[in-house]
Length: 279
Length: 160
Image (cartoon, rainbow over all chains, first blue to last red; front, side, top):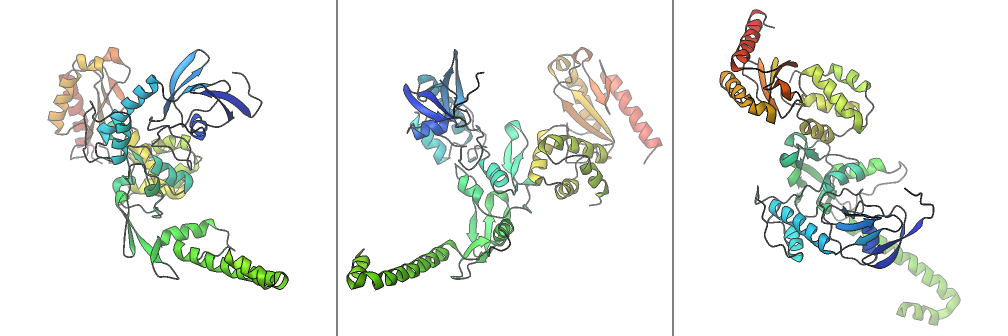
C-alpha cells in the first residue's frame, strides 16, 4: 500500500470530486457534502462500531468493489464511493428487514425502513415488544466516555443482550442518563419520580439531589459526586440546576454589560448611552 | 455466601488489567474455584480497574465459563455432526435419563455436570465422551454406563 504523505486527499463521491483529510471516515466526508446516509449505532462522541450496518456504502478501490460500513471506513486517496447505488439500496433494505424483524414496534426502525420501501419483513420476530437493536451505544458511552462501565453485553448469538451484570441493580451506575440520551430507538429509559431516578432498563434506582437555588431535583447524588471527582480540587462544584445556572450567568452578564455601558457613558455622553440601550 | 476471596488478589497480580489477559485471568479463577462465583468477580473488579460488566460479558460469552457451581465430575458429550451421525444423541439421551439432568445442569448430589459441545475436532473418534478432560472415543451406551458407575462408586468410597 502506498504511503500517503500529504494530509489532504481526493476521493470521488457519487461522481463528485471531494477533498478529505487523512484519518476521516467516509461517513464524515459524505455528511459534510450533504449526502443522506442513515445511521443508528453511530455517535460522534464514541469510536465507530459498525454494528447497525445501515450506513453501508459501495467503495471501489482499484479493481475491488465492496460494501463497507461508512462510519468506520477510512478514506484513502482515489477512493470512489457510491452512497445510493442499487447495490447500496438493496443491502440497506436487507439490513432494515432484519432490524424490522427484531424491533417491529420501534418507531425509528419502522420509519427508516419505510424510507427504503420496507414495510414488512420476511424474517421471523422473536419478541414483538423488543426495542433494542444491540447497537451498543449505551455500553460504549458508559464505559468509553464516562468511564463508568455499569452496563455491558451478556451472552452471545441469538441470546445476546445488553444489561447490568447478573441482571441486578448496578452498584456503579451514576444515573447520568447518557445511555438514555444516545439510545437511537428509545429502548433505554429512565423516570424521575420525586427524589428518585429510576433507570428502568438497568433495574437501578438512584437518589436525586435538589438544586441549591430553586429546589428542583435535577441530578443524582452519584452523578454530582462523579463530576466532583473529575474536577480539579480548587474548582468548586455548584450543585445548581442548568436553568438556575443559566439565569445566574445571564445575571452576571447583564451586570457586566451595565458597567461597560456606564463606563462608555462617561466618554460617549448621554446620546451614546441612548444609542447603546436602543440596541 | 462462604466463598474464600483470599486467592483473588494473587490471581489478579499475575495479570495486567487489559482486555487481552482478562480471559486468562477468568480461566485461572475458574480453575481455582471450579466456577466463577459472583463475589469473586466483584472482588476482581475491586483488585483491578475493570468494570464488572466487562467480566460478566466475557463470563457469559464463552461457553467454557460458568457462573454456577459445577459437579465433581464433568461429562461432556460431543454433539458435532460426525459424533451425531455416529450415535451421540443416544449416548446423551441415556446420560440425561440416568442422571436426571439436562445439558448444562448438575445432579442434585453435586457429583456430575452434563454438558454438550458442538465439536471437539476429534471426529474420527466419534461418538466422543469427555470425562474430566479425558477423551473416551467410540463410546457406547454400555461403556458410558460403566464409566458413570465407577465414578459414582469411587465417590461413595471416598466421600469428601
